[in-house]
Length: 317
Image 1 (cartoon, rainbow, N blue to C red):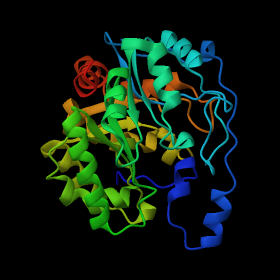
Image 2 (cartoon, helix red, strand yellow; image 1 turned 30 degrees about the vertical axis):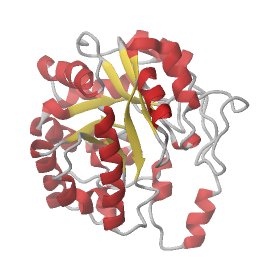
Image 3 (cartoon, helix red, strand yellow; image 1 turned 180 degrees about the vertical axis):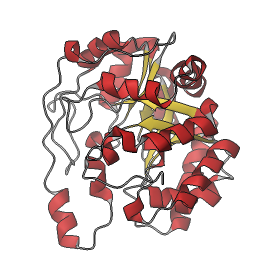
Image 4 (cartoon, one colour; image 1 turned 180 degrees about the horizontal axis):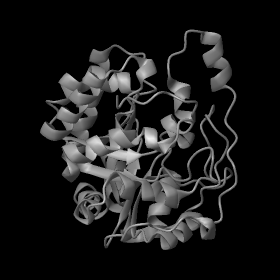
């Protein structure tokens, strides 16, 4: 059985609970972010890193006086400054990275755009936007290095499936017009319900965290097999990211069968992301997370595909 069992994480705040009161209490009690781990203490890569290796999923944060948070964030301000990340990159031999807009800032992308301007050509961005964002803003984003829009389908998980499909269609059409792709941050049961529809989506799309399929949410091995078929035959990409979000209490070995199956199915459409700064626990060892990829496959050709070739193609490096 490849399906993950759910453990408590920041992401679980969006899952439907039987008790509305329980959901309200959790939503109003933000997780406390921990200080950043010293980059010198990180595990070093256990395999040879390919040239131009890319971390395709990380977040950047800045001071709250300059970058205000949303009204009800799920966590306190993480210790995730760009300067911290650049130090970590040097230790792990990462040469490129993709900044993904966190829920902490909602659709206010100023922190992300400022970080792209500082980082320059080694970075790309994935924004969250309101529908109806004007063309001038989108063009400015593109010039800054943005190449995708992130759709928070946890936030829309209570909508009828047809409304979610219509939203995806509109955003996919917009992204296609810009030469961008779409990224889904979604619970696995929403992904399962969307698979027949997603098979016909003509724009490239990426599903975060290996599809987020959880046994407790009613997902089955057959559902995961259908996701693999979508990966192989459609415009779907999957992101090997954040295994601790689901499996931390059982150990990373619980995630290995799923990750290995994804890599085997379509290595040319798989990317890797650290999920730095590992909200809310910034003491996590990012090097250990990178080395999981070396455990999931020992093929240097596949390492190069996942870390270098695939993100270069997807993010227009």
